[in-house]
View 1 (tube, one colour):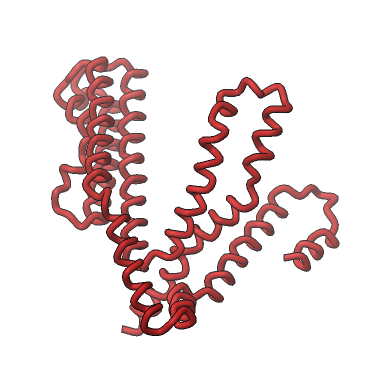
View 2: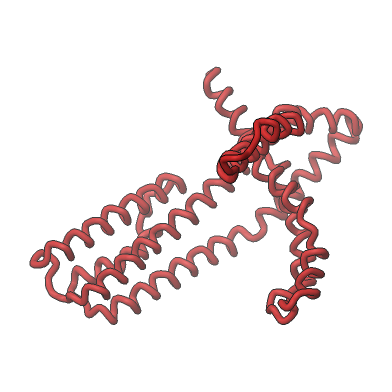
Length: 266
């Protein structure tokens, strides 16, 4: 039981560090200055400049999303990371499928795979990778409906049935579109979840303020977010990145005084 509590405490801190890092990046990035430099340079015809106001609005939206991620309850934060991991796995599955189709097009062989050892090797490598991706997605989402994550296996099935390579390319595109529709359906079916979560959180905050006051609310959030430990971990991550950047970019003539200065200024 103690080990479980320690793991939950570690996750409570570790999963919130990226949101603080995103807030730091947004704070350091001056969007107005960035677009002014584009305007003064020869890149003023860059299509990016046409989306200046959209980027400014997205900059503030990034602040809001970072704060929301920072204050989410741990169980919802873990679920959000699991969804993100599933999206990465689906992307990896389609990358495997795309690389397999491209290698088959480069080989130009359309006969049975068991006759050509190289073709069989490519097929088995892609198949194992796809099965691993589907299994991991099923485990992460805690469902036995593994077929929901297996659309990117259609090109392999088509190749096994000796479908022409040009048709396999079309099947691969269809698999990508089908997976995209699945993701859109999932997002649409959970569209009101953030609103309901914010609504329930607002009710709880109002109740706490009415009964205990603002000071108790602040102390509760301070303890829930483990603010001192969170900022310590955030500082250590930034310091480690600075050290890595120093050792990866420094030349042979770099002095020890520079490294000492780095330690003293962090």
